[in-house]
Image 1: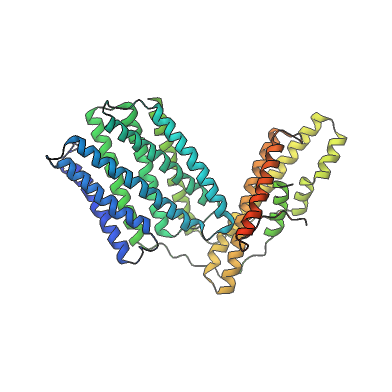
Image 2 (image 1 turned 120 degrees about the horizontal axis):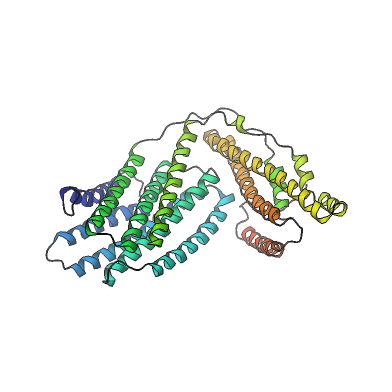
Length: 256
Length: 178
């Protein structure tokens, strides 16, 4: 069952891409394409790319070199679109809060720059798992992209949690899915790139990656289709507060 | 191998944090009531007394350097406790403001202002705590971080002026005297 090109393998490769394409179409039909243009582009291009890589894998006429070239191209497009989606969600979360949006943008830029440096450093220190540069380069790029992606997403979660920023339901689901998949992928690509596991171990890691992605696509469906809990809003008037006084005092402490 | 272990551990920790935040968010949504009771009253006058530079100056003149460091650390810990409570209260007020944003337009506007002020307080509390922890490590005034902080403040002041010129409608962080 857990063999390369088994039925489960083929299902886990194809199904998430088909579902993601369906999710993109659903998003478009519901008129959400204006609110989530980057995710719509990701859903369509990434799923088409994933299916193209699958076809390149099973078609005997496609040489191994060409398979890896197709995979490279899809990875580059998908990575670019993922970061666009993250930026889109971050803007949606921060825009309603002008008092922290500038701080958030400055911090995420600085943290992102640190992550890029860290990614380059780990790639430079990684031995590479194969002598074929096309393949080892692909693995290193995967490791670097998922290191940056998981770090940025973790930062966004921590920032929003610290300031108790409210998210719309689908934005939260999107980032949760990307966060879970990025963490799982980072771990597996780190092992593949640096430890060079056996062929069977490699297949198991591929299964883990594909199953995680499948779960994340289903998670996005859940957040899009299932409405959230309706919380009864309190009719209690807003409390008297001394926020302005405290703000002045703390600003005096921070900027004496 | 070492890099693989480090990255796997980092990925696992990130996943735990992300899932933890997700769980705590869903718990917060389901327990939206009783927020007022979570606000802890704090004495602003006592806080002013603790952060009064004249008090620090008086203590420095009256005590030996070693005694002053001990006393100043105690006072800084007390200030940190106040700031933490103020920050927590701000977090509660953010949630209360967000919950009130679906009322009529006047209430929504008041709630929006409340959320904005509370977020500003939460941000200031984080900066203040950072500064307090530096001072706890280095309790003497005039410690090495001061030039850095002064430079930061000048930079911040310039950035705020620029921000005000670019967007006069946005809230501007100006140190005010009471």
